[in-house]
Image 1 (cartoon, rainbow, N blue to C red):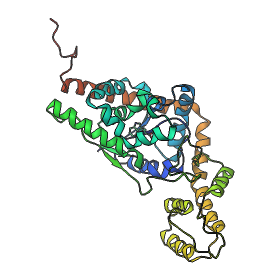
Image 2 (cartoon, protein in one colour):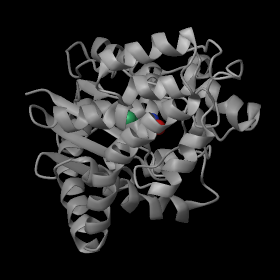
Image 3 (spheres, rainbow, N blue to C red):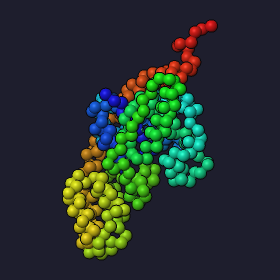
Image 4 (cartoon, helix red, strand yellow):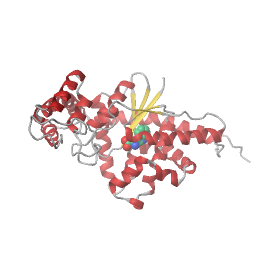
Length: 337
Ligand code: TRP
């Protein structure tokens, strides 16, 4: 069985973009992979160091989201990143294998820097987080990484580091990883932004109430040129259709809707109604399961503690493997003079 690893920063509740982008894949993959889910609190601190309390609080929220969408703790170990010191040890070594120029070329990091308006004022930890993520992935010797499109550059960077370590070690100590994208690897935000984001106030959380779902769908933009119902409408760049593509299983009916919309005569209101019904049906059971789970806080605690313990053993072993492959000093193998 291959090893699957994925994870999320605990900076807010997970949303339907995460669901179609990668959670759905993770739920399916846990049945035939050794699965690990990393709640990346250390990575969240790279741009939230002023508010560690927010990060701490959201660890539990992300764990609840995982459980509510169907992650089974007997199949997937859920672990807390900052409680795994081997990840930091490995990241520290990898930092010497990557140039600052390479870090600055990472397209996702570039995007995030632009989004936050940080320019050169970014925390050094933020610039380096792709290297820490390479440490995460390799510490588990994971080969399957279900993620959204924005994480592909992290996997490329990971594999560059893997090749360097293996070349220097002269043995194949670490495996390369593959990013697994879903059909919808980027869902637009409800505000019309390119991407739905946890911290951008443009997301529909997996815990959203019926009223929140309704308002979010109302907020979605369609085609600004579609003024009268009888006007021909545009499907491309129309957020409602982007969402229908992601959530409507009835692809034939959806194709017909697109033809009708393009021809004219299909009201935005009817389109939105169809989408809202789908989203209410998707989210309702997740929300209910989440509420039930939240009533038993010690259950979530135990799941996290057990998952972290399991991950600790594995990542500690890999850190030792890497140290010995690179010929670093270890008391375990060095001779006392
Ligand atoms: N960067 C990921 C995100 O922002 C979170 C993450 C941290 C991750 N470590 C990982 C994802 C390892 C996959 C594998 O969502």
